[in-house]
Image (cartoon, rainbow, N blue to C red; front, top):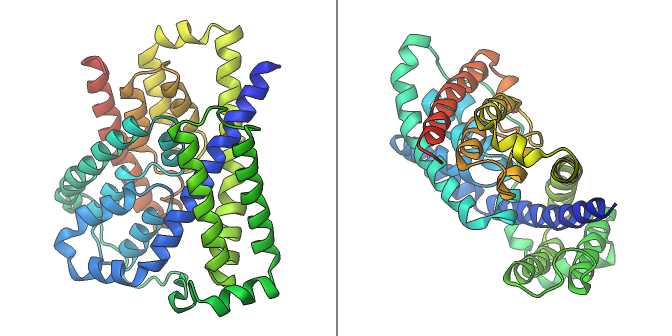
Length: 342
């Protein structure tokens, strides 16, 4: 059962990194929300760059903002398609944890593709006669009360009448810090990745301490922790365990490397699923050298985590066309990369 312990150990480390990164991204997104929205609205000609930039931000927040802008008629169909091309969902955090250098290269390529193919998509819009919705009203996302952050009186009040969510988050984060420091999970040696994760965990503790109750409850506890993290852990643990079993008992390495084209097709088809999680198996396989970059690229290009889900409630037709367009281009580029040996 060594492989189960190994999978559990790595799953805890990856999930901790994903959780902290989600908290940091959400925190800074909330702090700059007003300025960022104003910048986007005032520069419609920059929409391909902006929507792709939002999409490439790890997690779902940038993709959700792209959808919000699209349904309000502030960005074009091409811009939303480009934003979804650049989006890799929660898998972005896992990639940063497993292979940060190659992950950043992939994000850069996806950003460029989002801009280029977003522009091309708009040239095709007259054929499909697509018009962004201009009357939808999305649920308001409350920004962090900036005036209360780092306010000594507010921080004291947080602990005098501490909420259950804040208490549980602090206990979880402090337990992760102790576990990582003591070598209970993660690497035993003090490498740069362990030091980085420990630093991020400490920063997350500070954020939980200084932010208002409504932010802790709505953004961190209800959205990030209860909606995302348990799924990330289960999918990561499941993918790692499956691949470890395959490597040890099913001759997975020789089987996969002898059928890369089939794996590329499967990865592209799986990427159609509008949910973070199923795609993780291809991320894990790439990290272990089982599949080439072309498979990871096609999967990341086509899939958008659950970033496209809000658009389904406004326009099923637009959602299908976005996904179909991204599938055709993503699989085509992935196939070309495969042919040239990547």
